[in-house]
Image (cartoon, helix red, strand yellow):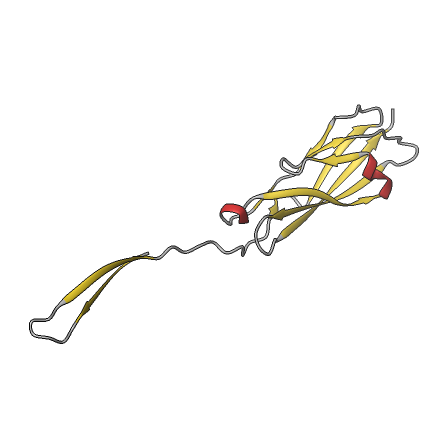
Length: 136
């Protein structure tokens, strides 16, 4: 916002002074990240190789600057043994296979993913990734 402030004294003739004020409004971290989907579904055969892309999650935050920058991570794994099988890229939201799967042992995995902005205080959003393992 630009404001022009003029002050005048009570003399005759009146003397005045003028100054222009520039007011910058900074963004507050008032929006939490929102995922494009609440549940992402993926299907992989049990012989899928390590490094295979499982899913790419995506969240957005309408704030500005650091309040908009997001980091992703897998909050919980179900079953907990999945922590050695899946990993997520903190910047891109890409979930990749980092271990081997066996349909006869586990046929369905649930990953709870969190996106958190870099604001102060940070705000977060959540989604679920369901991975169905296909028998070979």
